[in-house]
Amino acid sequence: MAKTFNTKAKSLIRNEWGKPLLKFLSKRLDKKLIYLGLPSPAAEDIEDWIEFIDEVIAFQCREYGKPSNVNQSRKEILELEEKLNKYERQGLLNTFTVYDGYIEEVVLKGVDNVSKEFSQSNTIKVYNLDFCNSITSPIEFTDKDGNIKTAFKFNAVKKLLRLQSELNEDQQEFVLFLTIHASFKGKELQNFINNPDTTEHKELLKAYNTKKGVEKNARILKLFVIDTLQNYFRENNFVPHFLPTILYIGLKGAQLLHFSIIGFKENSSVGRTSWVQGIGELCKEKLITTNKDIFELINDDTLDETDINKLNSIELFSNSKTYKKVWQN
Image 1: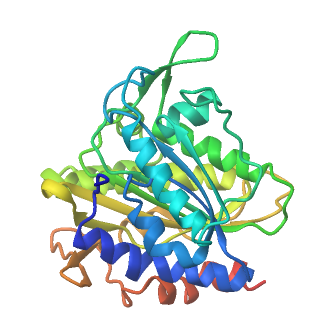
Image 2 (image 1 turned 180 degrees about the vertical axis):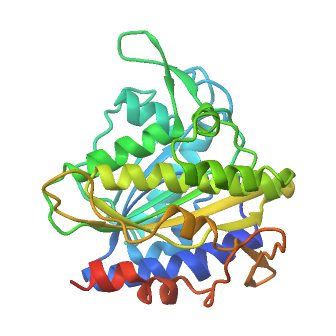
């Protein structure tokens, strides 16, 4: 049986938070969507979203946590390919590609471990980047010339957005889901913490440092991810809209953070695109968590955090300033 990382909380987020967004996009574009992501060999996300997906671009490493090596077993890659083949034979998918290796090494190197060239010739509509394991960042890989290089997870995200922005399509609307371990200690995060570049960042970090454990780590990571990704989006002419962040418990009690960012291409003639939201506004929103089959807010009386009125992804987006000012124009 294919390895699964599924939990009730993860299923709730996919089906009651993410799936309505895919339905919204598919209806708005009047077509099924192209997916790029990191499904497990059991491909639960694709299975749950299959009615809205036309094409899959997937990345699957051989032995998670270990540097890629062609002598490692391809068992999980073959299991994922078998699953996607089944969907294709059933007419549920039009086509798919599985790249052999970590997403960061494949995207930054340009080829996977069996020399399959990575390319992005179509506009991705659903990015599902599930970095839920606590692998260190950066990882090392060997480039085309045999040199040892380092690959950061967020550098891979940045390159994916750049490739997307270079495609000759004016109307680009998409959603990026990112899941990351709340104890993530990548070097890119440490650089951010050690070198806060605004007074607002410093004040938020000061407040978060009064907390301990996951209460502290989750909020610092939330600040880092929002700041990093909004820069990547805007540098590549995409207006980002961040939905509230979800903190939930995964397998073996792992604390995970889930981000949902909706992107819209804005043809800006000078500099970065606009952004309706703000770092302080987003970071002061209460975290959402899962409780059996519902979403609920995490309350912390020691922090000045604001309530979220509707714990519904579509209502939150459709009632937002971003939707009214950008998407409806």
